[in-house]
Structure formats: C-alpha cells, structure tokens
Length: 272
Length: 244
Image (cartoon, rainbow over all chains, first blue to last red; front, side, top):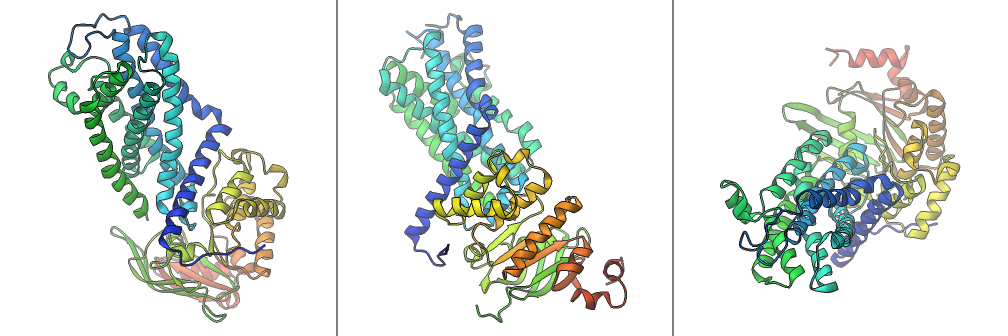
C-alpha cells in the first residue's frame, strides 16, 4: 500500500481538508456517545427531568395577565421556553469540559501532532454538540406538549424553535470552550463552568417576566441573551412579533461566536 | 532531504516557562535510520525537547529541522511525516481500539479503506486482533501502550518519536514492546526515544544524548559513555548536582 502525502496544498484543498477533519472529529464524538450511552444521561435525560419537575412545581402559578409580555399566555406557555433555553445553557459547559478531557488524556497532543487543521478539533466538537442540542430540543418539545406547551405555528414553528435553541446552545458552548481553556484544569472547570450557566438562566426572563425580578437583576436580565432567546421561542410558538427579539438574539449570537470563538481558537493553538 | 541529511537537527534551542529554563542551548543530531536515546533525570528537559520536535511546542530561540523541514515554519510537513507516542497514551477510552486506529489514520490523511486495512495489519502486528473491537478503557496498560504505538504508525511515519514509551509497563510488556520497536528499527524507521531505563538505552540505542538541567552534558554510543564502568555509573556521574 502506498500513501501519498501532499506537501503544498492549495487553499481550497486546505479548507476542504479542514471540513473533512472537523467531520471526522464530530463523528468520533458522536460515536463515543453511541458506545457509551451513560454519557447521554446528562445532555438528554436530565433536561427532561428538569422540565417535568419545574413544570410540575411552578407550572400552576397564575401569572397570566400580571405582567406585560404574558397577556393571553398561560404560565406554562411562558415557563417552558425558558426551561428549554435553561437546559441549553446548562448543557453548553460540556463542550469546554470535553476539550479539557481530551487535553488531559493526551488525545489533544495526538491530534496536534497530526497534519490536522487546528480549528478542526474545536469545530468538530461544536458540530457534534449541535447534534446533541438538536436532539435535546426536539425531545423537550415532544415532552412539553402534554405538559401544556402548544406550538401554534405547527411544524415550521417547532423547527424554528429547535434552530434557535441550537444556535443559542452553541453560542454558550463557544463561551464555555474559551473559559475551559483559560482555566486549563478539568477539575476546576467542572466546578466553575456551571456557575455562569446557572446565573444567566436565573437572571433573565426564563422563569418570570423581567418586572418580577429583584431590582438589581432587571437591567442585567434585559440584556441577557437568555431573555432574548426565551422571548424568540415564545413568539415562534404563538406566532407573535419576532423582529426585535430575533435581532437582539442574532447580535448576541454573532458576538459570542466571534469574540469567545476567536479567543478559544487562539488559546487552543497557543497551548504550547 | 538526501541520505546524509540528519533526520533531526537541533541547534541552540532554548525554552523557558516563566522563570524556569527548561532548555538552555541544546544541540543534537539524529542520523536517518538510527535509534537515538535521550537520557536524563526528571526535569532535565527531555519532554520539552520532544514536544518541540513534534511541533507541539515552540522554541524561544534556536532552530529545529525534522526530515529537512523547519518545525516552526513548516509544521504541517513535519506532522505528515512523524509518529508520536507520548507519556500518556493518546487514545480515546470511549472508542474501541479499531475505531481509534481508523480515526487517527484518517486524520493522518488516509482514505477510509486504507485506514481500515492498516488498522487490521497493525492490530495483528501488535497482538491486538482479539481485543480490537473492545473499548480501550477495558485494555491493560501494556495493551494501551501497544495500541498507542500502533496508532503512531498508521501513516507509516519516517520518524517515530517515543517519549518514555515503556514507563509503567511490567517487564513482559516492556520486552514485547521492544521486540516490536526492534522490528521497526530493522525496517529502517528512525526513532528518537526518551527513557529513564538506562538498560534500554544501553541495549537498543545507536547513539545516546544525556540531558541535564536543559543542556546536553554528554553524547556518544552507550559503549563510549560507559567507558570501563556501567551506564548507570556514567549517568549518575553526569547528572549529579554540580556535575555540570
């Protein structure tokens, strides 16, 4: 068997190779999940438990009509989009933790010693996490229906909600990747990365309208991307106005992908 | 690169981590087809040097050429030609041995069919055929090391860099690994090896460099370094505090 090794590849070939490598890494991550079903408990089963528990505990609060933005909407219809986004935020730290696990096991060095695009490891991780976020969102929507969450816009609405959840989850995942590489210690990262995820979920309109939050929380909650994402999902479910919340969320998405994404890629490449 | 060009050329390499100087002007050369051992106590700078040679780290000063390519300016060309076995087996515990080999082969540039064939060949060579479909986390330490070495060989590298490959292995597993490394050496693969087992360098290396406090304190064949004593004695004399 002869193996040809290209020494000088044109730019298009390099890009194609980076896409191929990212696909291989993403495939590897998904294969690990398939062969180790226990690793799916956190991203896929825990969100369902949280959904059922939170709706069962808080779902009967009579919030409808008490604050602007919830008029004509049951509290369950208000709450469930928040829970969907909360779960995406709580799943996102697994991206950073997985990168650190690879670094600690020597696998990251193995990848770095191969003629692989350095962006491929990060891109591949985000690719496989996109699949996890998609399955998670679809499962949550499936279970949310009998709990009182109706998507009045039908299948297109459900697909749009899934898409928004995936994009939001990936944005926070990029942030978690940067923070994890900055912390550079798996144990510390494991104990640290969930704090911001919990904080951004609670200091938002995920569970109650902004006006019901403590005074100091309200300015933060208004600009929090969780507030924007939950508002977009509520609008997508009811067929309400999308322009403003979608624009806000898009700005956040672009910012999180570009800034922490650039910093994470630089950190990954410079870990020498 | 012609036959006389060194497989590895290291000139004046310095590397510091903050206030700690890991390498302080290292020069060495590895002949093609040879097995060269890098000896040194813990903290001597062996792994730092190996990481620079394998493009995992950058030197602060100096130049390193591997198989005719500059590691700083042409890292991809270097990576396409080397295999690395580090101190920690670079394997995915959550995948089978076969899946690990195929993944690494494909990332090294092999087509899927080539990677599958090569994985089968190497599993047979390293006595892992029966275990190839098991998850790596069920492997013993010796099996992991052999799989790690097999993974390094997926793309038939011209240079194999081995950073303490036998550390932690029982004598039988070490012996088996050395049998396999001997076969590779016979086939003409250039190898750079770091080890703390002096008898390994004594028995297998064509040339030995002794590193201490980030500098090369001695070099030569094992016989030259030993003189009339043992390599242990020579090593201790060269690396004891105040010896340099």
